[in-house]
Image (cartoon, rainbow, N blue to C red; front, side, top):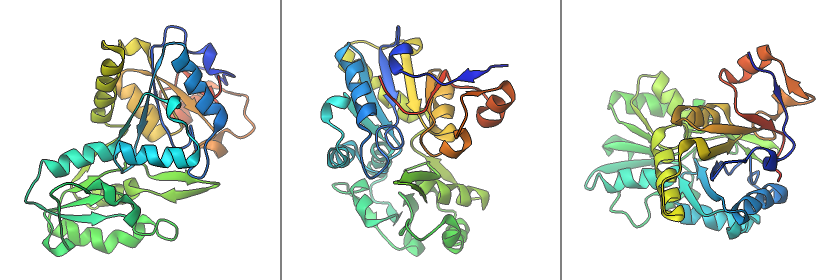
Length: 284
């Protein structure tokens, strides 16, 4: 059994690490503003010869994610490249020309199909669903979509989930994401295809970009994932065979409030398989 203490600095954990695969939302920003100390930590790691790939369940392509990061104050020098679940979802759409897509999500995510030969249609005529989120994530929950999901299940429509997250921070609130609807659809017996963490394709894409930037493939024992979600970041890293630094300021912050260390029973309850280390917020 393992007792986990909180690490103070990233610099204490990266001896021998060549590559960081860092989550974005909850690690480098909270949806409203950047975390300057976290951004500086990643920048410092890069200055010392490391490669930083931002790996995110954002249901938008990488260039759209980059524009959002700039608006929030995350400088381009914080990272080398971005991989998003939106990128992988766009590949699915591109690979299904002539098929009709029902798009479920807010208007701000329309870059998921922009520039592609996507035929947008009503649910009654669709061949598949792409879910980037809720139509109104400020007021709705997955339960508001139960009737729609029952209708989709009757038509045996596959649902492509462009963001496996259940919830995400927006300032000091938690809002529902596409993963909440996808899990409801799966519970109802519908077919779901997930893109993004914790599933392998997004990690494979991140490692391919790493090889491009470094000029060679990086051994997995020299890669460190950073994230704030047990379900996506920690599970995905462990499944891919890499260590994970778990940041507790994100969506699970209440579970760690007032704790200086975790005893073995708490580690098992919160994580199952423990991360490499805990950190309250990312700092060098």
